[in-house]
Image (cartoon, rainbow, N blue to C red; front, side, top):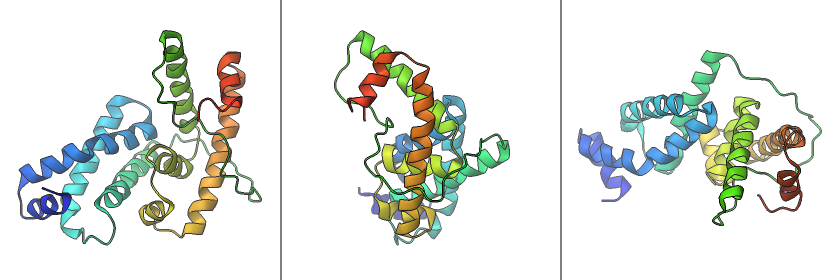
Length: 205
């Protein structure tokens, strides 16, 4: 069955159909939650909470956007509510005059080439540094980087999730990239020279 059939059955109380929807989307929901909170236990709790809210709100889904976009919207709200409750996020001041540069090197996804043992250790360290950097961003900028750079959502999809214009998406993403790059540069300056060189050479993007 396709998603729409499963959605209609779920609306009618077919929990087995909803379990199939959960199976199809649980990794995406979990990955978003994990990038928000940075640990598996809390990410699992948030993913579970997101699916509870998705099930409760399923009757309101009309298909105006894709089901995935709708799910991201609910998941993002759950994560942002959790961050507000914790009140531990660090606020980053941004330059209002920053110009958009979409070609800024980011390290939000790593090369898919199969690494050797030493390279795998380096990649693991880099993933930890990426998560550390994400944790230092405001939840607003963390969310937009997760959606665009990690989950590969289009600008249109992000605009629907955030309920804002394309111009706002592009401006916010540009500033989020700059904030991330500034923090990541500082972190890399305190790490070994080889990862810094790999970043500079564009080997990790």
